[in-house]
Amino acid sequence: MSKKPNLLILWTDQQRADTLACYGNDYIEAPNINGLAESSFVFENAYCCQPVCTPSRASILSGLWPHTHGSVTNNIPLDSKVKTVSEMVDDEYYCAYYGKWHLGDEVVAQRNCQEWISIEDGIYRPHYSKPEYLELRSSYHHFLVNNGFSPDDKDENGSPVFSRHFTAALAEPYTKAAFLGDVSAQFLRRQDGERPFLLNVNFLEPHPPVFGPFNNLYNPNDLPVGSAFLQPPSSDASERNRLDSEGYVNGGFKNYPLNTEWDWRRLRANYCGLVTLVDKAVGKIISALEESGQLDNTIIVYTSDHGEMMGDHAQMGKGVLYEESTRIPFFIRVPWLSDEQNLIEGRVSQIDLIPTLLDLMGQPVENHLQGQSLLPVLQGKRTLKDNDVIVEWNQPDNKEQQWRTIISSDGWKLNLCAHDQCELYDLNSDSCELTNRFNDESQLTRIADLAERIKSWQANTGDTVTLPS
Image 1 (cartoon, rainbow, N blue to C red):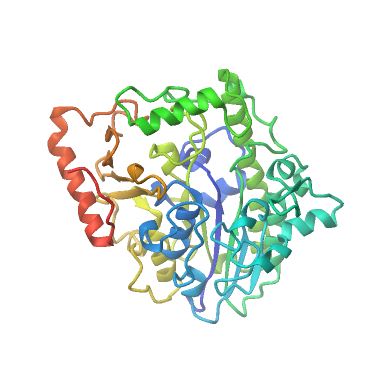
Image 2: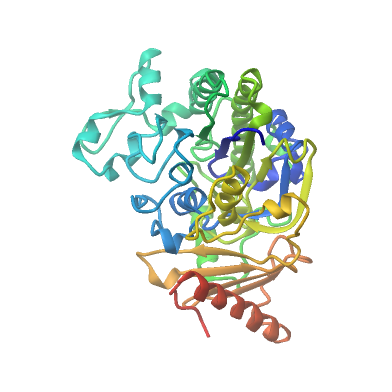
């Protein structure tokens, strides 16, 4: 490159991989995201580091495992000593963060970012580090007030706030996704190439509440579903998975009853509508980048912090180790390497994102990072055919529910916990993870081998969670 490349990271919250065309989806309308993937390096099987918001977000931005950066569950602020990507690039970069943060002090500019546009405040206010921050409101809050809306709720101190259910019910122009699309497009149109930029755009959608302006775009009865849909975990699955499933079947999800198959399908249709909502905002952003003349000098990443069960295994949400919860969309557009879609086979973790981006940007890949640069893979010099992936689950308030998972290069998945039924799935013949083979005596050697690989990873990364021998 003759000059330093820009970086645009587009990420969503709770988007499973199979919502996009490059991962086999042919029914969700997402022409802008799908179009971006058509000129990107698409990772066929990509996994988050931990399937819940705060730990995953911190890993995406810091290049560290959750047990290393310390934000191992939701609402643990990321330690100020832990550097994020905007603090790793040189001072020439103009850094901005737009959208959901969920790593502490939601509405306060930080992490070497010269611009900060926030969309969340209500539910995160109890976790602010200073009382004076409670006087602040998100950028999106001010946008709604300026457009004539009044807060519908109050926080624990009685301060007026907009609830997520209120904002989810707004017409498209006033949604968080549309707001982010507009302000991000304005940012990009201001870029003239004199100074490289780093812009994070982080959408809330398709995260709950699973409701939006395109609820009726998809017919619940027409949506294709797999063999795991509404199939409760078997009796030999982990107690955790079985209890999660029973909780949704008996108690519903986020005030939505789940009494019939149609109820589950209705939520899945709404979820698809939220993907389309994000796509429209992405279209504005990509168009503005093209108008700025910076498209071909900009690395674009598209990913999500974790997936979503959406009825598979009779579960909703995330937080479990099934593929629907841990696999995410992940592709990178690097126009000077290729302008065509390149499908990268094998398995990859988001832990590798930051070293890859720093390498692509010509920035130092700092020694403390726990992933590795994928640039040789993008250049065709290396493959991922022998790559194993690790996924964590940490639960500080319940030490008996600490899990470590390996998805091996040859398609076997081992979930280990010292206090629950462990699980082994053959993703080659059982991609929906319906048959737990952990107690199959013919698999003892395989289990021992995979467990040893996890323990080797633990030793290399300083992970001290106790696993079964």
